[in-house]
Amino acid sequence: MGSKGIFIAATGQHVGKTTTCLGLVSGLRKRRKHVGFLKPIGQEHIEIETGIHVDKDVLLFKDHFGLEEKEEVMSPVLFPRGFTRDYLDGKVQEEELKERIEASFREITKNNGFVVVEGTGHVGVGSIANFSNARVASLLGLEMLIVASGGLGSSFDAIAVNKALCDAYGVKIAGVILNRVLDDKREMILTYMEKALKRWNIPIVGCIPFDPFLSKPTMQDFESLFKATLLSGEDHHMRHFRHTRLVATSLKNYRELILPNQLIITPANREDIILATLTKHWDVKIANPDNDLEVGMILTGDTPPRQTILEALKKANIPMLYAPVGSYKAMEMITSYTVKIRKEDKEKIAEAVELVEAHINFDQLLPAS
Figure (cartoon, rainbow, N blue to C red):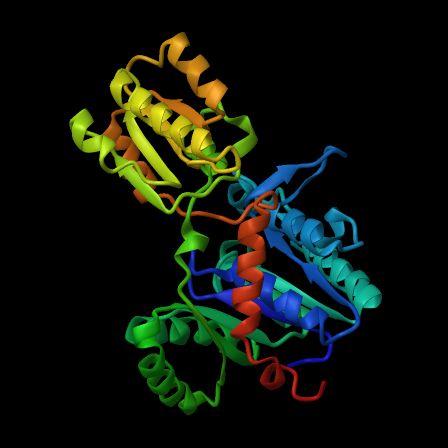
């Protein structure tokens, strides 16, 4: 790996690149005195207090690691909605974008010595504007780590496709990190993926196990998904759930299966289900005031919950939002939702860092350190 930094790309969307970068930066900071972070091209951006827009991952890394560089330095270029049309219409100056990326890299390198550069999606993302991840890595003179899903045949095929563009730009692939590898497949995948990659002399530098917790949405995620706000339990935006239950059963059957840390999806007019949940909540509290059932509720249907129900949920401090869709539609939306780590989700960040850091071979990655 080069002395200035490393470029991190993935074989596709939702492979776990940002999660991997969290553990990578954490581990590198324990082995190198100063490690910076750069997201040269961002797509999902947020407006900050100064009024500028920056990539959301930059805010996550700056907040968690206490990075000193300004947000706009770590996020020099954004591809907002309509950007590609503006580029093709000649409204965007390519040379200016190139200079901004290179200037940011120089500044962060000067202050840190080593920089983790996170790409956007797979190696070819940004090609329409001539700023693919492969080209950006080439501009910065960096080798690349590729994060791939923890399979074998399809994962290798995806690596091969991404490698082809790296080859076109003269970018060396320093290693592959396999993510979300199932425990019962780990030994087989490592054995055969190493054999497959040997033809290119590319090592596997990480094999990260699947952790279902990292894919669990929080109540804040559900607020984004349903474009709604919590109507009660506002203290628990970051609550996660071990179980998700769509309730379309009798009250008797439901009472027998009220579990701790469960997300309950039910129509807002099923007040019997809501009241049974409240009863269970208070039973737990009465038995031990320090305990909490730790449930959450998504109430559905054409009619929102009545005020008396809302007040009861507020008193119990149970996080609840109302989504004006059918229960089965709500469940379908939740099932297809892809969780992204938020800077406010400290529990998930801590678990991601610990998991990834423990499964990357830093001695192999930094042989000269």
